[in-house]
Image (cartoon, rainbow, N blue to C red):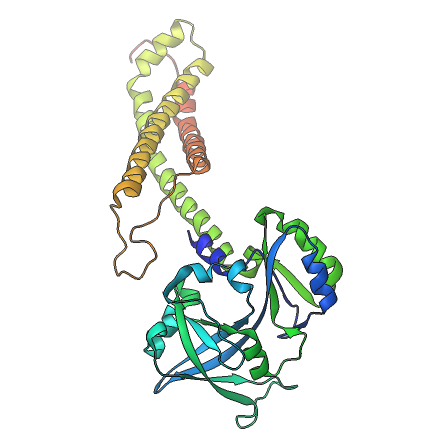
Length: 358
């Protein structure tokens, strides 16, 4: 679910500067970009930090100047909570705010009758900004608010690209990046190679996962950490199985001796106790998986575990059945069960067989 939310804002591919803030994009490069059949659409963007003020309320945001194609490469236009998707013009720009920024400014974006003041740093050759001459002060109106994910809702404001370029004093062919949507998202590797061929060095081309690599790495690591914790619980639970099988071997000493006297080999006796451990694991695994199926179905159907607060895009805890997870858990259960059964099975098979009582 989190991946789908981030995919709404991040495009299939993005071309950005390998170093610095801007890239130079020539008309020849754009023509070659249009000629790639796998590309559905692309948008030129300019990003810069800005201070937005509404009277005494203010917020530092990431202003994203975008062209007319932007609504077709991302899902921002489909996630508006109020207002209409309107970026305005160069002279009369309009700002689409994240709901978090909207709240920080104390406005309702589509009903705000007052203009906002926006301060943007101009492009300079040094890292230092002159507060008198290095800042552009302008006014802007809010037109709508979007809600996608907290990271974006509290950070971004989207407006007209020409207004931002004029404010930060970028050249005609200077941009922060190019965001690209594909006809088939699975073809990103192929398209990435084509783009690298004619953009060359100095341009960083990333797919949607590389654009936010830390998030997806943390999410993937979190799943494996939870799996590791559950494996540790299974290992602890396996001591119960070792104890139960050991007690069974002690209780059945005479029966084991009789079985050996009737021709049962030590390997045969060992397999009996291994089979007992596997049977216990099978009963436990099947019971647990059936209960899991029932609980997940009830959650999907009746939303038993809800998310309180009203600030989430869904009002219940999201769950999903994945065959790979069931197979992994099942294999783990049987692996640990077999290891736990080895000690008592070897102990039962290696004991001294004698029908005489001393």
